[in-house]
Image (cartoon, rainbow, N blue to C red; front, side, top):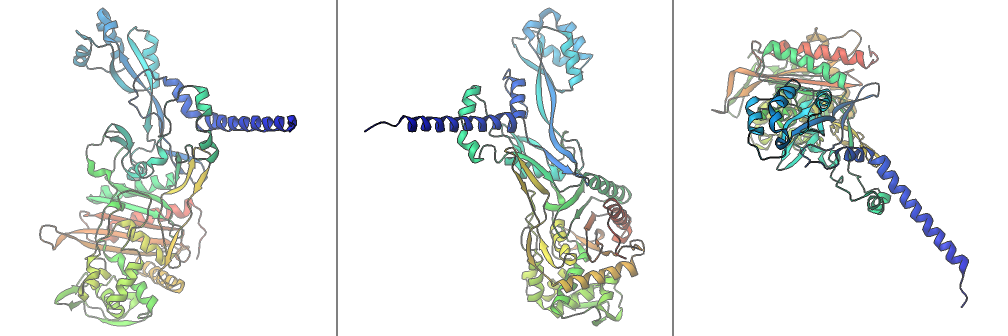
Length: 567
């Protein structure tokens, strides 16, 4: 059989072209996708054991104009070391020269240099570039400077519980709280191991480059947080905290239609780049804490009544100030009777007896079904770690009184984020959405994953959403003159809850949790703002403590985002 030289040549050409294509793909991966990593590798050259972070993806916030702002990133600093053997007789003069640039403890210096047999000692870390250059310029034999890559948090304390921090887990530096922990696999650079030489790197892992698996899990995350709004919101919360001296204060700004969290803040907070002495401040109370949040539950109860048709805004009942259920007395906040009044007044005057009336019309089963549909019996699905489980045991009780107290936010404890998720249902047409903090992930292989709005289910009808929004707008227009705006409709409600005493299972007489929520424009909301403060001093009702930060935040958002008036 005759051979076919043209066929062999064609086959070899195809093989050659394929190998060339593979090399080009791998070169692109090395020179473009992982270029920053290899530049860093070249700087460090393994001259010492790596004790710094090496490299890590960024956490970014996007401003309204589309520009990006780093919440967490990498910065270059320097490590200063000495070789005590080489210093010998010049140890004293070296100390004086170095101490003029970087403060050194004389006692430590003596321990490092006097009769030391060591040839390596780290004397300063995280040294700024300018100081490192000044030390290098001294030209002292036995003093060496190495580059470090360290985690940087340019936003400081702002959004610290959301961002989290990097800390040691055993011998490894990993994300420990917040987004740093939640997106550890994305932010870490586990695939960035040592390489033997350039050619081995070119030909190793070609298949994974082509398939997109190499570094596919590694990237930077872009959050839904808007840094200008975050900073303004935190400023308003801190003003309220300074005035009322609460044990804790926090708040959330969310887009009720998409679940995008625009701002999330809590105090006390911490500096992720500094030393944290109180571990209690590391947790996010808006996600990881549960509270009895009081009367801002009443619109949820009323919406359930409206949705089933057991009440309308004009339905009346005889308010006697107090009622007794299962031998337990329930009273309005002031114990006063209002007589025969419509449902609108239940919200206007925040009447516990009125919320209990709606619950009785619903019945225990339907009430439970609606509160479960609001999502209180399940995680919110937020992309933050450590989400607490709501305490809804009372809704499994056979006693009507437990449902009645739940109708105005007592006897059940929920995370603030869980409540914000449920309250969003009222204004967004009746849908339960999944709150989220990350907008997109930009992977190192140049693929971008975007996170869209996720609707879990429809809880109330669109008509019900419009009606409860109208009723809450009436609350603002008739009962909240400081909140009312001439050109914008605002739906809002305050809440004041007694704080449980863990010592006896009862409630403190002089300690309260204040809350405030509102969304606007009421019939097509761009924003929902929620604020709470625990145990404020010198004020009993949330209308005293939280009206100002809510109003200031609302006006800022409407102006900053140039929201069109609806009135």
